[in-house]
Image: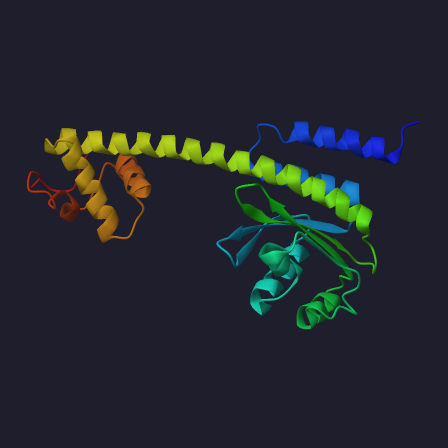
Length: 243
């Protein structure tokens, strides 16, 4: 009969395989599923960080988690804020007696949460966010749970970092393709060069504060562009219906 350590080692190996070649959304869902099983918490959630201070709930096992996360943003205090700023992990043993973030703790206690474990998800290149476990019971998490959460968070961070890179790569490839199609439509319809067609798209993007990819998508799908955008280049003096 294997030891508990052997069981965890096997489960972590399964997790590592499960996180191979999946999307960001699938990665987060698998990590949360494993967190519930490995740590034995009531709820779990993943927070993504944007910049140094803005956080958002990426996924959660219950709607209450997003509400708890929003409290931290509203108050500017809480374990996730501290973990992202300068700590690797935090255990809140009892929100009823928590003194580090008293306002936050009081609200979380009123919401029925007594314990929390928050662990930073990071790679050598960036801090991605935090992995959080919640319990309705006080003193629900110990140092062993903390160690398990750290391993989970490291697996998740590496997988999420890779998934983001892959998704960003495909988005970039697809965007270039769509912009090229839009250029082709303008070149054929208004007898423009590739550079002139791109200038039309870029000017419309800047003047209307719309991303270049969105402008290209609209043109390819509707074959229409406002007259002002086309006439913004000296070589194009036709109207805007491209159909």
